[in-house]
Amino acid sequence: MSDRALETPKPADGQAEPLARRGMGHALQAMRAIMLRELYKFSQQTGRLVSALVRPLLWLAVFAAGFRNVFGVAIVEPYDTYIPYDVYIVPGLVGMVLLFNGMQSSLAMVYDREMGLMRLLLTAPLPRPWLLFSKLCATALLSVLQALVFVVVAALIGTELPLLSLSALHALVALAAGALMLGALGLLLSVHIKQLENFAGTMNFVIFPMYFLSTALYPLWKLQESGAEWVYQLARFNPFTYAVEWVRFALYGKDPGVAPYVVLGCLVVFFGLACWGYDPQRGFGGLTKRGGGGP
Image (cartoon, rainbow, N blue to C red; front, side, top):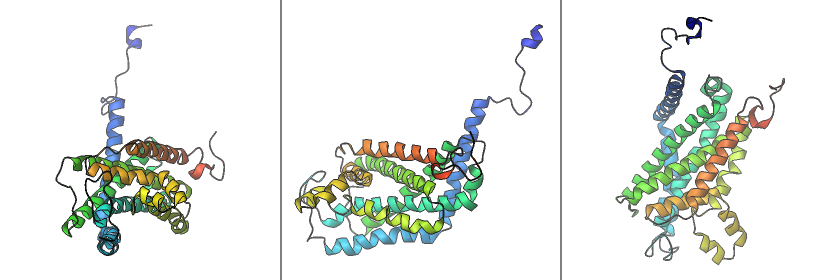
């Protein structure tokens, strides 16, 4: 055999770039396109931002104001002094913004999967987990932006928060991790929601239990002190509780304990199950599509 036959064939014009590098470039380009699309859509929907802020601001300006001095929080971690109720509730309301946007993303995913852009993206020559991760990052980015706007508005109306400290950077990391976890949960729910009509009922069984059975509105020791043991136990096993507590402890520069591990662990589990559910060999929801699946 001649030496020429053993030579590695040279790539044609336009293919000189290594395949791995081109693949990573295409993957990053796809992520950038998905995130920019979500940001553009959000910029055209001013009512979405208003509705995302009205709900927590009503809780802060009306509910928390009414209980400002009636329901004070004792000197417990992460606080070094007595605080009014509106200060305590702000991390929980930030979590509300993340939770509702994460669930709303699952509604958008159902629509996009059936008749929108994701219907085409899921057939793109890119790993499906990467496409889902790009969608998840776009959702988390929007959640964090909305939460930051709410925090700024809360500070402007007089809520005292340690926003100008180094601990605020840790709180931002906790905010992003919580947004990713709740976005991954919304992505997982979109696997099992086949029609938009089923979305409202599914949300009622997810959003309200997760929010009210957590430390968003009251500390765990208050639940145990009042004798609501079953509510206390459910709140302890609620991943949303740990997302809120991580933000709360990080905001005051205190050790959040196991909260980061729970949030990041749930993020991995939720996202892994969502990728498994979106596997075309099984069809959405782990069921083979009608007409037969692949081997």
